[in-house]
Image 1 (spheres, rainbow, N blue to C red):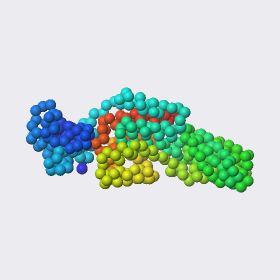
Image 2 (image 1 turned 60 degrees about the horizontal axis):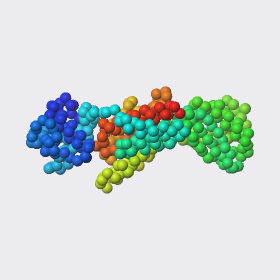
Image 3 (image 1 turned 45 degrees about the vertical axis):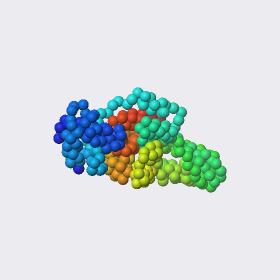
Length: 352
């Protein structure tokens, strides 16, 4: 069912509808006709407003939780409001400064920067935040190094151009020497620098075959052992950062609602949920709003998602930031906060 076009509502119906939604977003409570009659500047009786609200209910835009209660907007009503009536202001100067200062350190790696982005998003919006960090398989490699820890254990260190450092313990081949470690690292740096993790497997296999006579047996074994785990995980290195769970779990929700929200976070922490989030963000540039059951990932929890992709220097979407909250989220305020944070994260990723 599609929302009723605004053009089908007269001025009075549009005004009543807007007031109901804004009051719901502010309080979360049903709003009655008497309350509205006191708020609307022109003199309209409570009975007239009640008739208008009944018409809006028949259109599927409002709902009444109880026979004698006031009305609440439905998901369809919220979508109509967001698409046609919501006013999105510029981000507040203090909020802009808080976001910038939280991510201003140039000495921190990207992981810590993204953590802080999630924290400031949650704090400013009083909701849970999500930050999907850059896909490791889309990030280019800067440097590879091997460190011997013992005869039976070594460390493979990989540094990407966005400042991310990953370490992997592995069992080196018997007979490994400092010379073979240097040779293996030099080989990988020559082959992989400037290429993505996604391309790692093909490059290593091709170059080992092409230079088989130049690399001794131990060095070839060391290269394969030291990169085996990255090759196995190259498709699954996305990382989802969730902050502010308590914002959703402590708002007076019923036990049933709490269980739905817990299930939502469980789903998000599965790889499938992470992939869905990136797919949502990649659907279009800029901020996207998903209300309740509009997306199956949030249909059970009755939550809304405001999400924006961020891009690297090549304008390629590599991650996303967003806010998860109740359907009565203050979308007009949250949208510019998410948008600015996504732009800043993208800039910092590009700078790295």
